[in-house]
Amino acid sequence: MTGTAQPASASVAERQVTETFVIAPSKDKAPTLNTEDWPLLLKNFDKLHVRSNHYTPIPSGSSPLKRDLPNHLRYGIINLDKPSNPSSHEVVAWIRRILRVEKTGHSGTLDPKVTGNLIVCIDRATRLVKSQQGAGKEYVCVLRLHDAIDGERKLAQAIETLTGALFQRPPLISAVKRQLRVRTIYESKLIEFDNDRHLAVFWASCEAGTYMRTLCVHLGLLLGVGGHMQELRRVRSGAMSEQDSMVTMHDVLDAQWLYDNTKDESYLRRVVRPLETLLTRHKRIVVKDSTVNAICYGAKLMTPGILRFEAGIDLHEEVVLMTTKGEAIALALAHMTTAEMASVDHGVVAKIKRVIMERDTYPRRWGLGPVAQKKKGLVAAGKLDKFGRVNDLTPLQWQKDYKDMTTDGVRAPKEEAAPAAAAAAPEAAASKRKAEAEPEAAEAKKSKKDKSEKSEKKDKKDKSEKKDKSEKSEKKDKKDKSEKKDKSEKKDKKDKKDKK
Image (cartoon, rainbow, N blue to C red; front, top):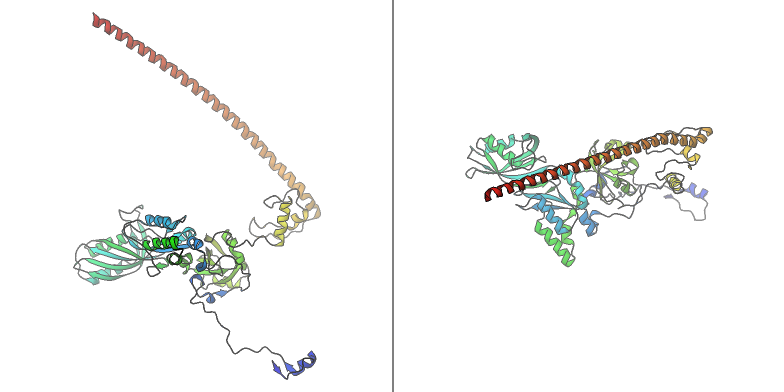
């Protein structure tokens, strides 16, 4: 504000002539939100595109790191270092018993002798198992060659040759059907080679479902000396690697024992991590709190429900829908690109693929508008049936004004109906119901007649079968008696003969 100060009693007219009132730009820059260090899905939250900043926060749900322990376990995953010898299913079953939870699942089977990264999902997190099983994997493998080769360079060239799309047939010891399939090796490199001991260690990044055992056999064939897999360790599965707080079975057992005996949950919270850890590589869409429960019930995400969205979203790409607190709500398939989300004012943004969050974690926020409230009142008064459909008591004004959007998903254009047509609507509906009821009654009568005929036929058949059975049994008895009589007569004759 600039100008000569006037006494407070001066009129507005006097002050506006002598003074200038301007909101001058501040020299201090507005503080920017730095979210680089924020955890999980909230990381770099400030870099997302803003669709709207206006929404009403609802005090439901909680940050993934602030969940109470039962919910922390229900929405948790374990980055487990699988021990050698037990199968993946055995390990998962042991964890279910140790933690006393309902369900557990894993990110992809490892052979009993194979060690390394196995993502164990608990309860609600098991909904992410399918997406994790299809994610890429990384292995460190020990290859044993059956004879010495010319040098390390030849082996490195062979490993490089077996990169890209390869034909593979599952090994004989595999439990799956041995069909020829194509699997991709994205990258591989030789780590170490000992020609005297015929041993090599190499690393490979590959598609889910690749058989490293088969790859080792192919390497042996390519080198002309033969070879097989000596040892294998998985070092990455999807978003989790062995550097991401990997734990052992002993850690899980000790953490549960510590909580049971001392009520110290810190160890258990370090062992079990939030499921949002697996979704940090997905593109994100942040939705309003009022939208959350509708999505949990399977509703599509519409444009008014968006707050922020990530750059680079493509059509039909898998994205994660999240709350403002950083909770994962569902996995969805994008029906709009980033550019479309920024420009359109209506439409379907994404369709739900897999709901993660439990229903009613957030309150319901649909059916609260004036039309919905009026419809509920009519249903309660019996003027609409329990499904909200028109009946004989429905007011004419409601029939004229209300257009049902549930049939084809688009509200039909309003048509001006004549009063006579509106008055005739109930009669037409009644006649239509009567016409529909007549063939139904005839059909019911016919079906009843058919049933009675069938039952009569069945009774006759049963009687004839019973009669046949009784006749057969009588014949059998007679035959047995005659055979018995013949035997006794023969015996008597034999006895008489012996006496003589």
